[in-house]
Length: 468
Ligand code: ADP
Image 1 (cartoon, rainbow, N blue to C red):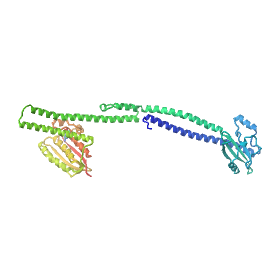
Image 2 (image 1 turned 90 degrees about the vertical axis):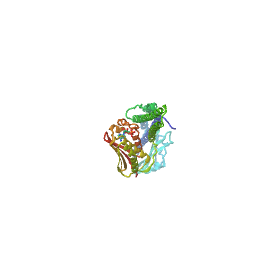
Image 3 (image 1 turned 135 degrees about the vertical axis):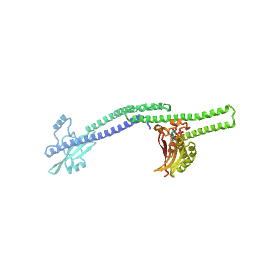
Image 4 (image 1 turned 45 degrees about the vertical axis):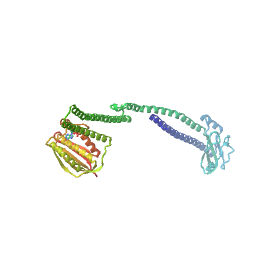
């Protein structure tokens, strides 16, 4: 059976454990009680037998006259040997001189006779003498190193049995009461202890994507539940942050898409308002095509980032010579740089093999080189270089451009982030280029490091694991 409530399970465990403990303690107690009762009876029998043997050895009738017996009864409420006693000759015949009856009931076992012949006492429990078993001691009377008699004394185990019975009865009466109390107490305690869990579950149920700013109340006390509440709250904070980022991203992406689409629409509407010459139509269509190119680049960038976020960015894993890629991009960038009066240089180059996707790596380097050219004033320099550093390939794009303030350096890898400086230069980026570069580097198991100072230029270093 599977019990779903922790409270019920705890109570059940608790009660079961208590039952087992109670039974164990009760059992051990009972065994000790039986042992101690048996021991007491045997000790009493031994002392009485000892006295009787001494009397017999002194030539006195071992069994006191009935008056003494009477005195015992009156003072102690019992006679130590009760009605069970007997004296036998060395070959086991009952001594006919003995007083009161009752002695006839006792029998001498062959074992007792044998032990007596060797001078040892014998303890036996006889069960069919009376309603209760009788514990009997048989001792030898030895005179002048010769066995002259055997004395037997018995004691009914009635008292001892009723003490045992009382113990069992009390235990049986206390067990259910103790279990009931413990079970009830356990249930109440478990309920109290788990109350904060109910409250937390209730609060958690209220929290949805729209209410991620809400937090669970901490029951306090620094215990496990308090830690659980703190952990869940930290998780909620992280979720809240990611949700906000996603919202921000969607809003920014829509906004960035809206601008070129509005321009495109405006241009088309103006073009259609009056008839134009073929040259004019051509110019308008060219401008529209440029706008469409911008939109396409933006959508491609967004798609790449979305795939990287979802962990489904498809990557080729082939051996790629990075120096070849750097040289290709260098050739491609020379014209662009020259148009802006910037010198594009190839610095130190080492053949460097890595495992990766050549197309994506080209994109990465193009973005960095593009930025270097964009954010460097005319007359400046942009240098591409490639080196091996330990286990890493270090691909650097160094410029003598506008540089970055420490605050900007913190944020340039955020989506759609553009420094105030970059905005004022009117360069048409979307603030996605570095994000994409970073995603590609990370998808290759690498990273990007930036060092820069305002007005002194920047260096972007891409570190990628070497092919081993
Ligand atoms: P975009 O260049 O399209 O604005 P990026 O993601 O490539 O977007 O860059 C984000 C921002 O980082 C830029 O707007 C600019 O402020 C800053 N930045 C990037 N590269 C450089 C650089 N080489 N020198 C100075 N600032 C840079």
